[in-house]
Length: 312
Image 1 (spheres, rainbow, N blue to C red):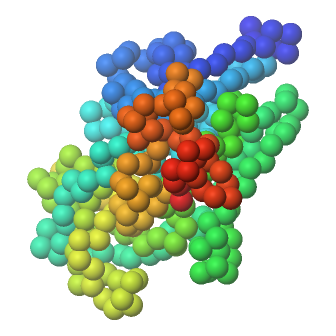
Image 2: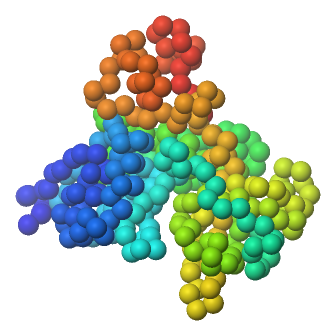
Image 3: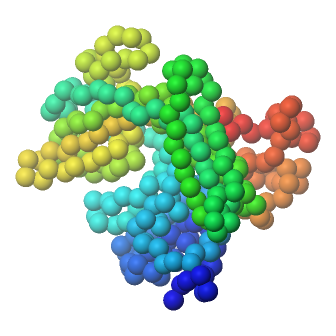
């Protein structure tokens, strides 16, 4: 059994650890009960070069380990789809998925929207490099524009036993923080309860994007009532089968749509490169268009004077 005299050590891409090692190997789920395609897409398209390294002395509870150690450090969260499959979504959406699935208006919702504000998060702290006793590293990212705007800080702390500075921990922390800032650094507008018609909203899942137009929702840009095609992300779905209704909650995702942290040329968000990708000057053009490389902090350029890919 796992213990101080016999610690269990394992490493790999956290998406592989989630799918193969934990869900199928330890929990015993069949592949058909897992949204393998989405998990593999996050592995291949967002976190291809990420590796976590664990050494544990006590068998963890599966749900807590998945959520705290594998998903939270990457800005991901777990959900159960309408078909019963285990799946994940994240504050860094998969490339190509930032597209509205439906447009809501006062003509196709049954209740008035209930506007509110999301919790402010403009400081993200990642703690990693656990040495068996404590975390040796605490990386702090601050969204300066938000801090100035609201004159206050809202913190979110993430601790990871498997995240290591030697395995791109600092770069990963910055990337994940940007995804969180895009959703929470502006006290984003939320809709806590919106009742939609079954035939229009039954297929929506948490993490999907929609648009909302409504004359009685405050427009935070103009200061007046009324929004048109404002971009939101679905944060809650409750299907009321007997009434043919779908109750949903929405969070403003305008900054996600605009691409906070994305290269202005539209090529990003850039991925953490696997070990097979060479340095900038030796990389192919498709590799340069896809991955992050180290640039000069002062000039903001690569070694050949090309503008470096910005994270924010």
